[in-house]
Amino acid sequence: MDYYPDSWDEPTFTGLVAGCPEVCRLHQKEPVKRVAFEETNTGRRFYMCSVQGYIENCGFHSWIDDEWPQQMKNTLLKLWGMYHDMHNALMDEKIENGKLVKDLNEETIKVEKKYSSLMADVSKIMNDTERQVMQANYDKIMNGSEEEKLRENKNKLQNELMKANDEVAKLKEGKIADDRKMKLMEEETLLLKDDKKKLEYQLFDMFKLSSARNDKLVNIKQIWEQ
Image (cartoon, rainbow, N blue to C red; front, side):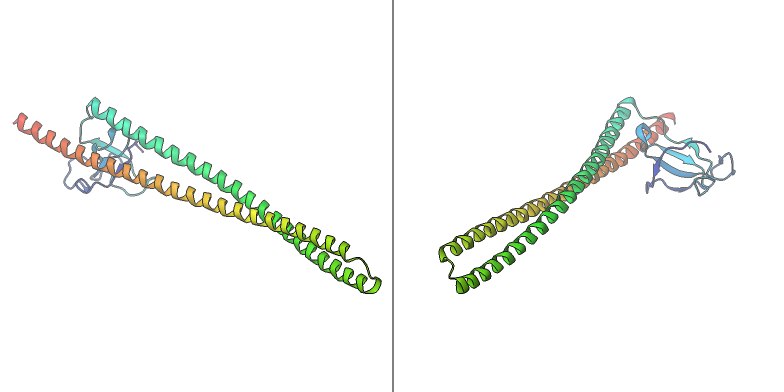
């Protein structure tokens, strides 16, 4: 199979070349019209084999348009370079976002484990406090123990419980902040996709303008030769 450039469906230049005296070398069939979409050949019209299927198609047939002027080639190279840079930046951003999401997930798992551990500690403290209070009341009733000692133990346990609740609140705030970071990354990814689509529309408009100019040049050349 002969090499043929990447192409796209241009509405003004498409379909089978009916009655074309030239045929493809392998199948001896009339070619189809295509418009190149590759580097400095972008926008150039050409004929290629009309047989469907990548394996069966015998490839490129012939160019319809001459090569672009050097200024146009430089412009196309610049645009394609911008496109590739943007594509690479998007890929790098996607990889980086994937790493951040992985780190956030790992951090979330750690926070959840710590939160579960703290809740277990809080539950244990509450149970221990309840048992100690009950035991203290029992001792007070049975043995007439000092109320001051019981009050000190109760205050100490309440302070530990308050500290544990504060730690739980901080962990919840950290989880909310991580969720906000992930939402911001998703919004930035959507903005990058919109920028890519805008650049593709600009390329499409430029290619249409280049095709129209090329048609005018062909008409002028024909008039001049006549």
